[in-house]
Amino acid sequence: MAWTTPYSKSGRSALVPAGPWSYGMEAISVHAMLSGFEELLPENMESEGEGYVYFAEIISQSPNFPELNYEAPGLVQYRELAIFLKVKYGGRVLAYCPFMYVDNDVSLLRGFVAGFPKKLAVIDITREHPLLEQKKFGGVAMRGGYGLAKMVVEPMEEVESNPLDSFGSWMLYRFAEPMGVKEFVEIVPEVSYAKIERGNAELKLYSGINDELPVVKEILGGYRFSALLKIREIKKVQ
Image (cartoon, rainbow, N blue to C red; front, side):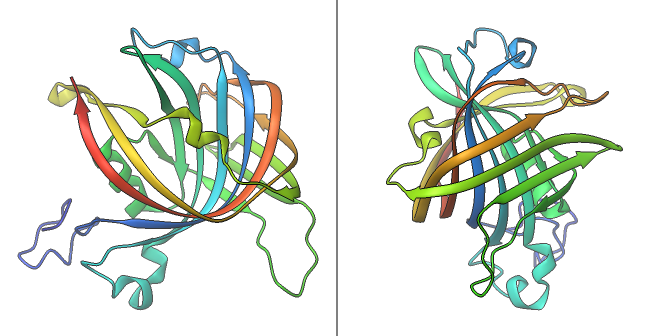
């Protein structure tokens, strides 16, 4: 059964066809201490400012509609910018996502269904080619005529772990004021890595009239990774 409208009996006209969805990611990221985030946290949620920001090129795939990946690949391929904060809520440590940006309408609405705070943006990311030497990888994003983020990562060594995984399950605040929806959603990710590299990094986050992004206080490390993301569980938090 399709996840969203438009409705049809076959479900093939839906903007977001039925899952489960898997996500192949090629990403660069920065582990950092952030400030100026207090107004972004819902009530009873606390953070010391440890954050994680990534740019990713993503291929999404559903076993219920595999034809999309070769008949209309543009519908399931997109770029993404995400910001996570390590928070404490209800006595637990979690990864709270206050902002996420994509350049694809399927991803936008699929995120809304789960509670991801997605917006459309223009996102560019460095691509790698096996016959070209590429030492640094960058990502830039903007919307509404103003910049959102700029990242540069220079991988130096292969490592075994990604800092975001130590943040815990993902916590989302899903709300739709006109319909009276206000609830927390917990997502338990299942991530498999092909490769993780760590190195030097630069990161700048910018606020605009419609985007109150936090400020980068200290960079703890830069990363580049190739991963497969699946959602093990999604549930409301009581």
